[in-house]
Length: 63
Image (cartoon, rainbow, N blue to C red; front, side, top):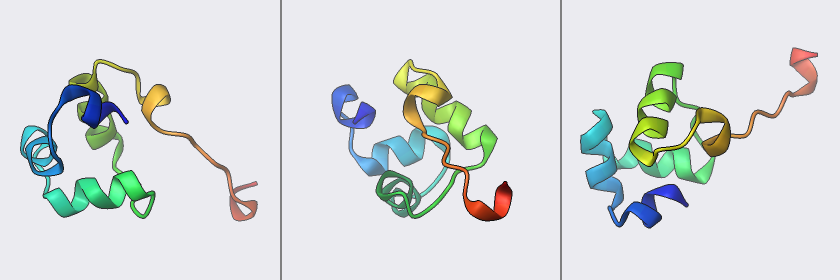
């Protein structure tokens, strides 16, 4: 997990990207898909690419 490698908690990550701790928790659990803007902010803080952090899974309705 990138956030843990940075040594920051969910509240701090949320503060850095402008969302709540709860939103970071939901993203980490896979219960919330961030906007492109938020995904880019998270990737920049983690010094990674969006593709490194998030896995896109196409569902049957999108095919």
